[in-house]
Image 1 (tube, rainbow, N blue to C red):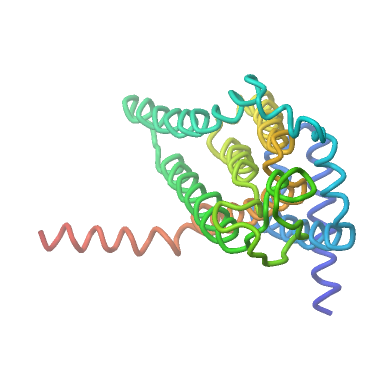
Image 2 (image 1 turned 90 degrees about the horizontal axis):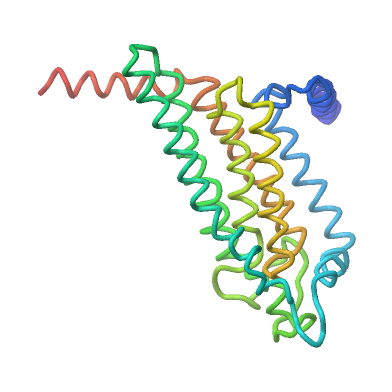
Length: 267
């Protein structure tokens, strides 16, 4: 019964997402709960696929590798600039959202929802790309990057997804930090961007995030599975946090407000 119920919810979420995307409303495609279910299903599906076919990772990375020259695109100045641009774009997004809040305050308009969404975006960045991806996965799993393995000019061994290894000691391949950051930018854009801007802003952000993520393949810095799983993991974190902080805010914000009132009354 549990399995049938779960499969039904996944099918329902997929059907609703596809329908609304075809109507050109992708930012309303799914609820936070449905997004978390879809992202969790993606993690399972991608994990099974890459565990069954680990050579796919190797074959994709080989597209960018030359035995006599290595990963030649790693020296391309355009691609290196693209990689460095991500921090600037993240900061710009947060500053833009904060600036819009100040603008609305100056005009006497309500900002409660926008403040809550900005705090969500900052928390999601800290927990998703920061804590889960960089501190947990990248430092604990030990998967060597393509350029570090003996398949691509290094000395380490190739390991499939989810296989702990000691081939890398810190800041390792599994999963992709840039991929996680790109997923955060797309998710944050869905929440922070004004509704009127979304039809053009979201496709642009999705293209930018895709290019930023796949850039790491060209550099030999990540396998395809590292990138795809980083997207799905970040989506789970963001969907769960959004449901907690924005979808059902009373559980989070009411205790905080009571605490602030208590401190104010005692002062």
